[in-house]
Structure formats: structure tokens, C-alpha cells
Length: 630
Image (cartoon, rainbow, N blue to C red):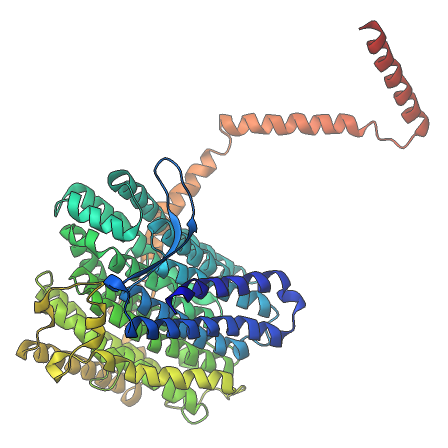
């Protein structure tokens, strides 16, 4: 069954080609069947491969499928080859299954859009690129998938390109992530020149043999890969593109946040964890970036009024938790949270889409209210997804994955109490801002009438993801609750971690208890501020201090303002004063000469046939004379 691995990326690539070339001539029903069916086929094959892998694990816990040699020059022979181990298996499952759920939802949600076939073509290419990324056995092929998801994010964020703002948001996402991609590309050159290969497993082996812990090449390589991960996963200081990426259709937002794009950076660091283990300074930087990002994004989420922007900042914050885990060496905890986050974040975005569509494309949570009876599916789905995001103790998947990160941030030799405290504060912020949305949207006075109700293709994905947002965490119940963490054990062959990180004890139970208290405190504050005393937040926001803080957090801590003045305006200024330099004058002169030649030739086209005949005769005479006299 493992031999079918190549079909997982090939099928969505093939459906993309069909939809891109023939989609405009295909009925919407056929487009949906091809677009959704291809991802369904990927999911089925992924499940069959998983069953085969678990029942008969390949030798060494990994299976490599070489399709062909891509390039062969000067000792550089990267292959088009797929690598399957526990890590890529889990990522393949998450990407294919969650993407299928989102595609099924999209078939109904986007039905009235004039770009229906174009939408599914882009979405299929997105999934194919992400699967290529996670299954690649070498960093060059991984980089191909990496750039593929970047291209698709640009196409889908700017999907409604008729609105200039959407095009600007797409350009911003593309340009900002290119900064990280440039660092990643330089890292590939550094790794190949020092270690002579880009095959990931051989690369990790050679790095462990040739580089000492803390050596300059190891730190440089890890730092460059971190730069790529920071850009793609929207972490400080390159997080500014993701909130604006909400310009795209809601299913696109769900796909970017849950199954593709932003999780790519987390996967890259986990896949190259050996490099980061050899560079403690770079690994510590990963933890610091994650801790700072989860706090800053959590604060920004508390003051947003657009329901999708709240969820965007929550993604930035939750990816911050994953970076925190990676930074303390808790590799499996990061991937565990990536999986559970995929379930509840996809759920939250799909429910947000239901609400937005039901209220005439309204995004402002302060213009909503009282929807829990009119949209019960949306209400319960958002409550379950929001509770999982906040980490409702013992019940939701988010509790188990986030608490594992918090505990290992405390217990790991690479962790610290400061990192743990940052994580706990993040729990409080998450609980506060997500229940703020729940109370404002689904409780209180009804402000708008529901104009559209979802069909079964929208309801079914909500139900499935709601179930997974609850039971998804049970695969890795911690030892403090009397269970063996099966998910961690599965990943151990691909992501080995120190045994002391998994020992249960009183301190682990204490960490879980404090996190539960932080969750309850956030919920209580949200209830007091947005149910019991609904006018108080508005009164605080208009005070001098409250206004400054609100605007500062609302504007993403002034990051766009800072980049505009440090980078954008200086470049524009330099371009304006350099517009008439010598080089431009040279090419302008060439253009002017061509224009003059065109004007001269233009005068010969006067419509007088006798003149044409005369010129032809004169030319013939001159030509014959040249031939005779030469």
C-alpha cells in the first residue's frame, strides 16, 4: 500500500490542471465533483497508507519512494522523491483530511461565485503544494512546495481581485513572506556548500557528524531556516501579512490557517530539528519568538471588531505556542498542537463563514448579536471550537495539546519559568478574546435578521470538526492523568526527545491546574465585560490611556507603521530621486530613437498607390544595380 504514496500529491495536481484548462467549460456540479473528489481520493489513500504503515512499519520506521532524478550536475543530484515517516505521515493525514472537509464546505459556500472553477483550481494546487512540501525527501523539493503554497496564498487572498484592497492584501502577503523565503534559500546554499547534499536525512546525519554544538555554520544555517519559518508561519517580526490575508474567501482563510501555509514553518523546524539541536542559540530564539508572538497577537485579538481578523490573530498566537514548543525541544508537542489546532481553527473559520453569509457579508462582531437560536449549528460549532482554542480543561483537544506545551516549557532543560509564564498568560488572553466573540455574536440583542441558512454540505463539515475538536486530544492524554501518550510515542522515532520531558508528577499536575485557572479567569472576565457590563469596554476605550492602548493593539503594535517608515517610504523616496539617472536616460534615448524612426516610416504609409509603385520600382533598380556592379 505504501507504493501508492505518489498518488497523494499527483491527484490534486492533476485535478488542478484539468480545472485550470477546462474548468470554464465544465458545469459547476462537475467542477465540485472534481475539486472535492480529488481531495477525497487523497484522504482515502492517506488513510490506507496509514493503516499499512501502522500494521507493518517499514524498516527503520521510514519509507522512501524515488520517482526520478530531478537534476544531475557537478555532484548535485536532487531527486523527485517522497519520504514517509511518522512525522510526514501525520502531516499528510492532517493536510489531506482537513483540506477535504474545507473543500466539501466550499462546494456549497462558493456556489454562487462566478469564479467557481478558478477557486477550486487554486485550492487543489494549494493542497498539492503542501503535500509535496511535507513528503519531500530533500530540501529543494520541499522548497518547491514551499513556494507553491506561497503562490497559491497570493492567488486566493486576491481571489476577488476586482476590489483593489484585496489585490493589495495579496501583494503584501506575497512580498512579506518573500523576505523569509530569501533567508530560506540562502540557508539551502549554505547547507549544500558545507555538507554537500540537500537530502534531508543525509543532511541531518552529516550535520551531526561534522558540526559541533554551537558552531558558527550550525547557528547560521538554523538562523536562516528560522527566517524562512518566521515568514511563512507569520511570526514576529513578519506576522503583519496574515491579518490582511482575510481578504480572501472564508474557505481560503480556513485552508491557510488550518491545513496549509502557516503550519509549513512549524514543519520545517521540526523536520530539521537536528540542526536546531546543534545551534542552541537559534533554538532559544525560536522559543523567544514564539512566546513574544503569542502574547502580542493575543493582545491584538482582544480589540479587533472583524470576526475573521480575531481568528487570524488567534492563529498567529497559536503558532506562537508551536514555536515555543519547538524552541524548548518539545518537537512532538508542537506537532500535536498543530494537529488539534487544524481541527478547531478550521471549525472556527467555517462557522464564521456561516455567520458572515447569513448576515449579508457582515464581518463586524458589534453589528451581530443574538444568533444562537437562529443559527444553532453555528452557535454550537463556534462554542466547541472556541472552547478548544481556549483550552477548556479535560474536555477539548486544545487543552491536552496546549497543556503539554506548557508543561514541557517548564520541565525541559531548554525551557524556563519565564517561557511557561508567557504561555499561561496566553491561555488567559485566548479565553478572554474568543469568549468575547461568542458573547457578542451569539448572545444579547439581535441586531440583524438572518438572510441565509446553510445546507448539508456546510453543516456536515461543522459537525465532523466539532467532534474532532473534542476527541482529537484523547490520542495523547498526559501521564499525569494515568495514560500513555500514544501520539508522542508514535512520533518518537522521527522526533526523539529526552525521556525526562514525559515524566508525570506533581509539578505537571500543578501546571495543568494553573492553566485551567487561567482559562476560567479569562472566561469570567469575558462574561463580566461583554455580558454583565457590556458598556464598560466602550467606556474604557475612550479614555486617554484606553484609546492609546486600543489603537496600538488594533494596529498590530504599530508594525505596519514602523515598516512603512523604515522600509517602504525610503525606497519610494530613493526611486523618486533616481528616476532620471544616467541609466534611465540611456534607455529613454533608445526609446526616443525608435519613436523617431517609427515617425519617419509612418510618413511613407500615405495611401497613395503611385508613390508605392514608384518606391518599389526605385528599390528594384537599386537592388539590380548592386547585383550587377558587385
